[in-house]
Image (cartoon, rainbow, N blue to C red):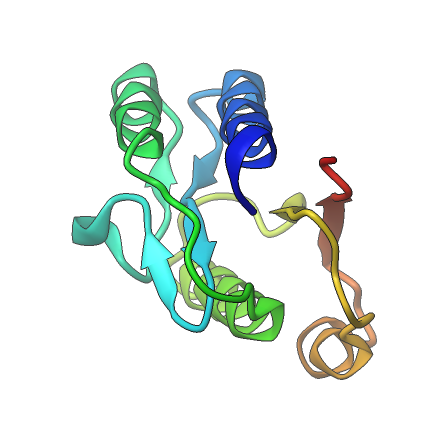
Length: 133
């Protein structure tokens, strides 16, 4: 994802942050062959979506760049693991959970990952915002 597609992806993430309230928790992960947390100090956790945190993450969005091939399976596994770990902390609500994917295209349906983490309860919603070009 390069050029205009990357710019659109960053703006999309920023717009999603606008929809989150103080009762929400989030993190942003960029991915290629490896995971890259937008805020490296907050690897593997979720943070409260207060104004300060959202602005802090927005500042880090500008540092994202395209490199390599997006390995969506790595990102999905990480996202499900973060949600699972966070649920065990007692913070937040396990009622409404979502993984939002911003991609310029996925090469698979990743059914095995969803079956592993999200079956049969289907507690986590997956919102894919793809084909940015």
